[in-house]
Amino acid sequence: MRPQIVRLDTARFTAGNVEKLSLPAGKTDHIEWDPELPGFGVRLRAGSAFYVVQYRIGSKQRRESLGDIRKTELEQARKNAKIKFAQIELGIDPRAERDKLEASQKADGLTFKVLFEDYLADRKDKQRASTHNAAKRYFEKHWAPLHRRAAHTIDRATVASLVRDITRDHGRTAAARARGNLSALFAWAMREGVTNSNPVVGTRRSGSSAGMTTLAASSACCCSLPAAGTRSEVYAGLSSTSRAENCCFQRKERKAGGCWH
Image (cartoon, rainbow, N blue to C red; front, side, top):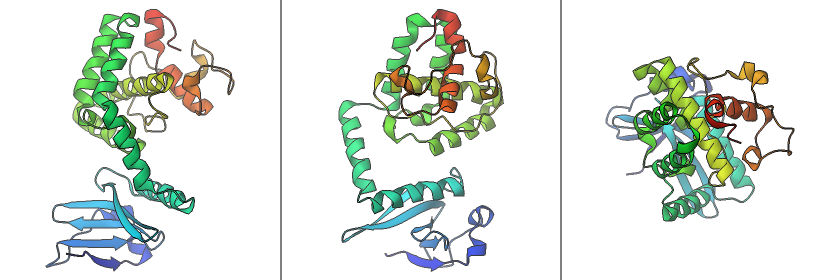
């Protein structure tokens, strides 16, 4: 059955009102579009509501989910939609690119679980036992929803949503420590050349925790930040702010056995 498509007045398409959307009586599939961003909207089905983006590549019209409205902020979903629209303008098929990457990583078996197990094996002799065991616990327990995900599909919106869940279920300190370990993992993966970005950078901190330095205090980091283009390839493509964040998340590891980079 083709979904019914309804356009809303601009004033109604806000984060607050999106959360209140419901299926019209007698309908099982209903889409409401954002009047300010053609091709972006919310798809409603029984028991679920997802942000969607719709676009045309040649003769093909495609529609993709951008995340559950309960777990993805409206503005972040809009930004993700705009990225896809920009790719289309450049002649890039977003779905084809995604499928290509997923097929490649699936062939390599590079799921998040495989990635963090490789990371822990590499760091075992460079961390104190307590630090290593804590990291293992966070990856196995707090980041369990990511275990079967292909590593490259983990984005900032996904991380931000899970940090909120961890904060709610385990508290601010646990969320901050889980976030710090995840950032360290992806920074390591970038150095190893298996990922191109760190999806933790830019997400909200849930609170301070022992052994972690806030970005505001990054200038006190015992490993001075490099000038752009002058240090290890792990920092390639990162802003100075991102380099500071990834550096300072590793202060406990430096105490245990030297600066990781």
